[in-house]
Image (tube, rainbow, N blue to C red; front, top):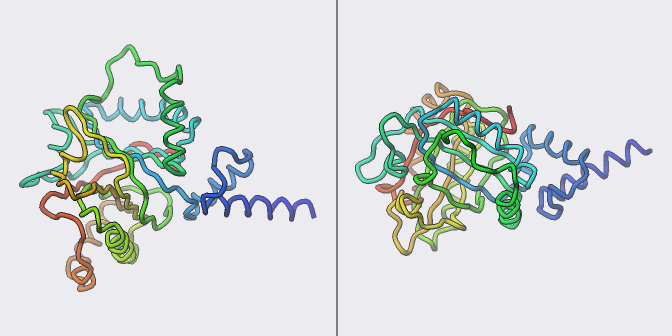
Length: 284
């Protein structure tokens, strides 16, 4: 009876977390462990806020090492998952692109990164705690990226197909969408998400700009040449590997269902890139 009751309590709390009723970091350790297990198996457990980044880095190994060392600090303050990916295929654009977004210099690559939080309140609390954490003191050695050109912002998740497990390749996207088209964007994301999953994608996530600050040198607004009546969106598609991704895109380009579900974003200013993971707290 005790074992059965424990099972009921654990799963009830896990389900409550999925609906946002129970903050993750207030749960007992055993239940947190169970929820992490559900997440690894593909359950969407209510991570509704993403902090997204584009970062210029000149040192892949140094960046991955720094990310691994900093991740436990962020997790202690409520971060649910931290992922860092390194540029593999970042094309030049006619008007905007990810290289220009971070004012990329010779010898550098673009990092596409995200951190999941339960919600914006959890992020705000985490940010305050991290800024006061003594472990976040600036290192004596040079940083493996240029913080002055780092682009960042907060996004409310409008579509998440659910964790599909460890991945080997990511398509990252940042775009501008008319501010009155949030529901249309979410519907578009869900429709296309189903097609990508059909062709082998593991997970699709799309976020709507909630806190996208202006920067002195670079920012997401400039990255997509944002108009006054537009909002920045940030999203990605996780694939098992690049070969699966390439085959999927080739098939989808001739799929009539893609043409019937027209994008809601401003195509000429959208920026894209392909990336390989270098660090992931969920699949370290």
